[in-house]
Image (cartoon, rainbow, N blue to C red):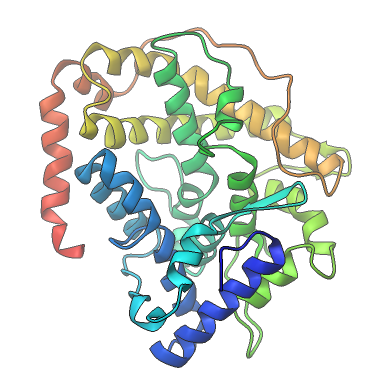
Length: 358
């Protein structure tokens, strides 16, 4: 195989990986295979995410792995490397996370982790205290955009910055088109008639088959409807003209994004030493505003994509202006601003207590 550079090629790559997992690892259930393939990208010591994040902070990378473990149901994925031995499949999969095909795109890692998390009714519906949403929300749009709201707040410590940078950036992070399309796919691939519901695999079919049905490779029906079905799963009321209840949906998502932004900043940047002392409080003062700006841009983006199918789920201007700061309402970031060591000690203790899981 090789790095996938088109929708058709990534379906073929996933099919080849599934075939090896069936033949060499005995993974006849697509539920097992989706967990294993998710671990190629997130939540394991061999994942692409861990390779990247451990360079920044080993402790932070373990916290992220703990988060992925928690949000996806508590089972560490099987290691696929023995099944892939003698092939380039592992490297090819990791090189093919973000796919662009004739102006369209998708993040395969986001699709897989959403698809896996949907297999648990609890993780589809139960909110994680202090993190803004359910496991399914956190591993898809909430993690991307809540992290983006935190990043925007951190940037504004130094200089005014438009929310556009969260949706268009050189590092392909947060709310870029590939990520949002992957988040939508995480809700919709193999969902049957219930976006965000339990995955449905017909007998003899697997992940590659479900993805091929979703992508515009044959029938384009699922692809054309994806923005509306995704918005509906998030609480949007949808018409052919877009999202009808924009204001209410923005309010709902902004609250969720703020909660996750605080969690993201504390677990990612306090542990790495990137957010220290007064800077933590200053970033916190921006976060309610940045969360609302990100929510506004996201809902507007979905509404525009609904009105013009099959337009990519890709943010365009005009973007909301920069919000005013307000008092920091997060006890965690307040603590980080006055006693960074205490917060880092708590996070390190979580890693120590749960280290056997890794």
